Image 1 (tube, rainbow, N blue to C red):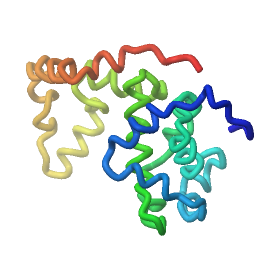
Image 2 (image 1 turned 180 degrees about the horizontal axis):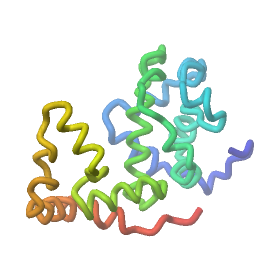
Image 3 (image 1 turned 30 degrees about the horizontal axis):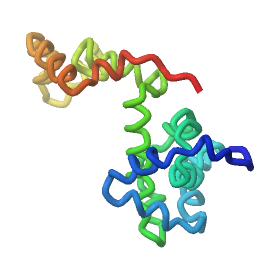
Length: 178
């Protein structure tokens, strides 16, 4: 993030869209104590990931910079940051709302898009394989779970639901350019 912020890059509407998620307006209470980022396991692994920075960007309405950051997807949702916040800022909840906005704008990592396409095509994010079937048998479970794997005709129903929810259109969108 550059030291100079151009006001033309700020979007009050984006900020308000984030605040539609109950409690996320509390990001305005952050006073940069660093409790969230100092306890973050992802920040230890990836210095570019900084939940505090993302919330500041959200509070300023820095839509394009924030939605197009690949680090937005690094949060593992462990909620450690949220538990440590003395102001009760719902860090993870706000980040999840920002991710939702990104997805609705067709912005997601290629790996996430691929998983979405697998759900549309097979009804599962992780299709079953022979190894999984064997493990299920060893656990005393049916080899095939009672999902579209066992009821392939239900896949059309899954596809209808995904279409009604607009998921198929979101997955089909091209990633926006910065």
